[in-house]
Image: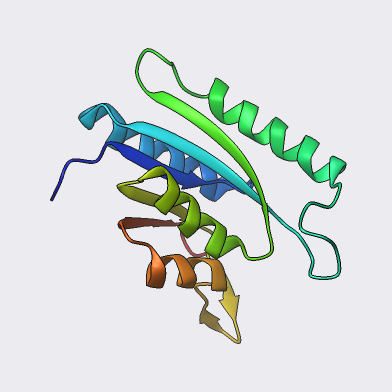
Length: 142
C-alpha cells in the first residue's frame, strides 16, 4: 500500500464523526499525514447553488471548529473546509480529487431500511467513485 499523506474525513455532526476522526488521526500520526475534515451543506435544487444559507453555515463552522480543537496540532495537522453542493457524495469525491487525498475515512451510522442494513446513497457514491482508499467506520447495531 502506498504512503498516505492526505486523509479526507467528511463530518456531519454525530457519533460516527468521532470514530472516523479517531481512525484518521491514528492513520495520520503513523504516517505524518494531514487530515482534512470537510462538511458539505446540501443545497436544494429549488435554490441557487450559492444561496445564502447563513444558519447552516454557522452550524457547520461550529462543527469544524470542534474538530480543530479536538486534536493537538503538534501531533496531527488538521485543515477544515466547508462546501455547498447539490450532491454530497459527488462533493466529497470532487474534494478528494482536487486536494489529492490518498484516503477518505467515512463514519456511518447503523441504519435499517425495510429491516435490512442500509449503506446510504452518499457512502455508496463515495465507495463507487472515489479514486483513493476508502475506509468505512460503521457504528455498532443497536
